Amino acid sequence: MASRAPALLLLLLLPSHPEGCPAACHCYSATVECGALRLRVVPQGIPPGTQTLFLQDNSISRLEPGTLAPLASLRHLYLHNNSLRALESGAFRAQPRLLELALTGNRLRGLRGGAFAGLAQLRVLYLAGNQLVRLLDFTFLHLPRLQELHLQENSIELLEDQALAGLSSLALLDLSRNQLGTISQEVLQPLASLQVLRLTENPWRCDCALHWLGAWIKEGGQRLLSSRDKKIMCAEPPRLALQSLLDVSGSSLICIPPSVHVEPLEVTANLGDDLRVACQASGYPQPLVTWRKVPQPRENRPQAQAQLEGGAASLGRHGASDTGSGMLFLTNITLAHAGKYECEAANAGGAARVPFRLLVNATRPHRLAPLAPATRPKGHEQQHEAGSMAFRALGLATQTAIAAAIALLALTALLLAAMICRRRRRRKKARAPPGEGTLFVNDYSDGPCTFAQLEELRDERGHEMFVIDRSKPLFVEGPVDIPEDRSTTEGLAPGFRLPPRVAYEIHC
Image (cartoon, rainbow, N blue to C red):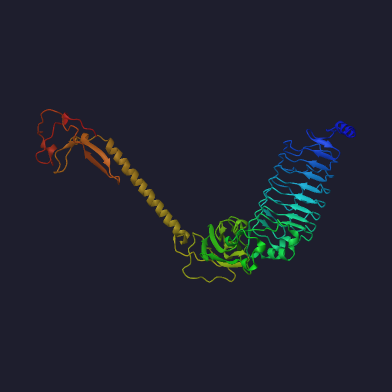
């Protein structure tokens, strides 16, 4: 114990913050520790001769370009448990001596092809615990000496056939605890030095596409798997669920070739229209549906771009049913879109195709379709039928005349309506002539009334009508005499008596 005292005393006397060390970090020898400091970026001032850099347990979300450029001597870099969402191409290009890179526990959703460019000496790469979904072709092409690749605990659903190309020195590959349903034989072919393979805890789909894996493990691949790793359990189809792939016979690993349905098989569209055509496919495993335009011989027109709505990668991969569908989506159709298309559905059991033809109505809406087929010069662009003699097929002069006539009729109607309204307003404002203070009704009525007893209403069609309100007084109280001048009562019903004109007030 006494012999250790001088050594401990010497360690205590060593400076923990030598000159050039970032604030709050600990620097000693060629190692810099900046872990768990709530850093959002890589701190500045790291000594250029640093060989080991600890930046774990921070909140670094991005490696700024040039941040690591001064650290050319770096051998070990620990960036696990941060918030990295992406790696820029060439982010580690200035670290040619790097041997170990830890990126576990970040938020990486994808890896670009040049993300690891320059790391020719890298031996160990930790990418576990991220959010990776797909590994694209040639992602690790720049890592010829990589020996360990840790990809467990991600959400990887797909490894493209050349995703692991270039990893000829890889000895350990960990793909456990992902979302892999299948894996192709081409993926593992570049791994000539593989010694340990971990594939457990994935939702494997035990069909004909996985037949090779079971046969490969039984023939010689067992040496790569530990007793635990050999438990490659089937998740589907339901009849094979929870069974080990090694226990399933090859005759049970089957696929159902796809069948394709497109309705209708031919469509005529007008210039400028938008078009969507659905392609439905069935089979097991769920087919991947894609559209393509079939090139025509001697076709001088530029080919139209057929867009697959939703993305081809997502089709055939989600959902409980065995039916996949893709949508051909064309916008602002031109003559270049006309031609033959194919909807293809493919799975491990095979592929099926259905042709679809798009005809484009080359006749502009204001042009009149010819009544008789005209002789076209050789090499002239073929015009497709409009399919009907609608208004848009009329000639420009005819359409213009019809439009002018409609506009004239509408203007005439507006003028007539304005005149009628003006006359009615004038009549209402005009003073009523003598003798119009009394309104006589038909014989079946029970007597005369005045405008004071009328209420003007309108029915549902807008027609005017008057309703007599008998609760209002008809005449003023007092004696009533028959006027001597019979001219004012001409046309009155017999027996009706009129009051003096001054005996009541008329409201018009």
